[in-house]
Amino acid sequence: MSIPDSVFDISKWGAFKLPAISFAFATLVLVFRDSTNPEEMEFVQYIIRYGLGSAVIAYCQSLSYSTYVLNNEGKNDLPAFIQVLFMIVHILWFAYWFLGLACYA
Image (tube, rainbow, N blue to C red):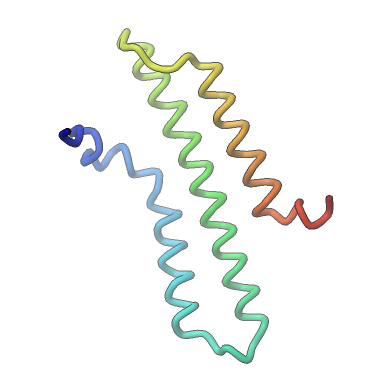
């Protein structure tokens, strides 16, 4: 089983630069943080939530772009309504668990 060439195409993964940078920054802050200061851990949680949010947005953006391009080229891809359903599920999952809405339910 070979790996498709599209996996190594940097233009496909360009949308995920911001989540990668935020997770790298969160890792650096976790390594060099003061364990006696609870405010620093709260700051790290905000960074991770931001990274997860930007990852969800980048994922939805890449899904919609690939659907648009492949449907215009006449290649078989998932129908647009299934892609929109996937996006809605991911956004709701993110909103419920990572924005803290689960704490208020």
